[in-house]
Length: 543
Ligand code: G16
Image 1: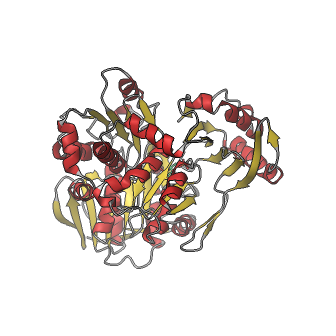
Image 2 (image 1 turned 120 degrees about the horizontal axis):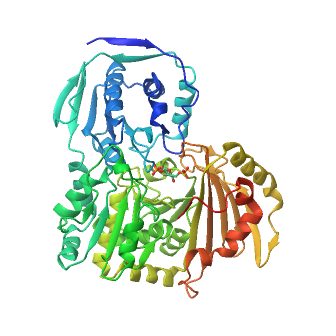
Image 3 (image 1 turned 90 degrees about the vertical axis):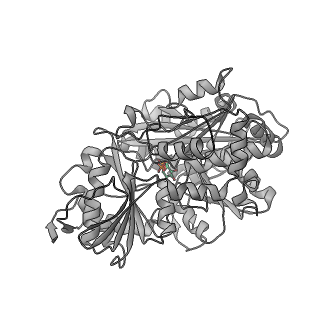
């Protein structure tokens, strides 16, 4: 085996976004594109010699090709060992767990999450640090800076590794351990939840459907939900990971899981429906006749976490991303624990989790998780819901209604305008930003603006500051309009408009969400002009 030093020229578009570098597959297929980015990552890390790296992905098209390249570049850069999921598969939370469990130096997560796959779809590479979480901005900034000047990369000429064979192989001097992607993760889940109680729930006739969307959670869900928890075979649907996700869009929302939603809303449908995304970190929760918004789900899981053995001692604190509704804040207040508001991006939770300041984290973008790993975790959320349902012996609908009757309801929606011309989107945000300082105190019908700013986060643990994280317009009655540009899209710009209105515990909780927010939606248009300036009549997706 020889270590080769290959000459290359930089690409100018390798800036990691909210969660790694996500691009069209055709972009990744350009000569040396993958190699440049991987070498830029390794050049930005200190002392990788002899260290262990975890590598896995969601099985999407190009996963197998990039894994072989990554193994050869890791070997050439002096890593001592790589741990790879069998057939190149690891869900994002399972990768996070393996990094922590093996005290690895870090990991490469190959995924574009919920974005479509296949030759015409998207691909992504994300670097996670030794705590198992996504690299913080200081590292992603260094990777981008390096990618702009890179002129060579190191790679070996070792043959491909047999990704299907569990056990130990080598690639040049480096050890390659191929592991069962599910086993360690399943053991972790068993340590957190009351599997006996959930088994009894299924044995009593409780019916569930779990849509793995032909993505990475299929093997995990078959083992945990069907084999270990005894749900009938067939509970998990679309459970075989496919490189193009069966030509589907592996985003667990009401658009792409419409069939499941309809089933849950029909008489005779199952009691519980859930889904996860391409790489297994997002979740969708639907009870019979009750969709649970991700923001409510974080709050409800935090309020009930102590019913699961892994959290029986209580939770230390909660963190949510800024655009996520304030429902969880009310839970933290009642429990007398810390509450943190961070920018969008799971990486911002890492320091708080490491410092033991928070136990549960969540985002409006269908992400919930805890301190068991340093990523959001789709199946974890589903299992905690099952544990809560079993312990309370109530339906999802009853649990949600009880929650609102205790804490009040935060009506919440997100309107996405996808593939908008980037120039128009940036100008819209810039223009609004310029007007923010004059908005506080202004009245619109019966709403008064209490504050308007561009969110800046001051990390309480490492003192770092992250500015321009989204525009917030808050009203005196607790309502809120938030506008920001997505950091995960691959074509044009995606504008996200988040709307929230609070209804007290004794108020009306049975309104349809869009109707309950109609006044705020129109006010957002008057203030931000998204429809007018993009020429769109309506959002591309409403969640
Ligand atoms: C990623 C991040 C999340 C973020 C989401 C949406 O999730 O990990 O923290 O909330 O993107 O980000 P944006 O609004 O910038 O598009 P995933 O599931 O795509 O990895």
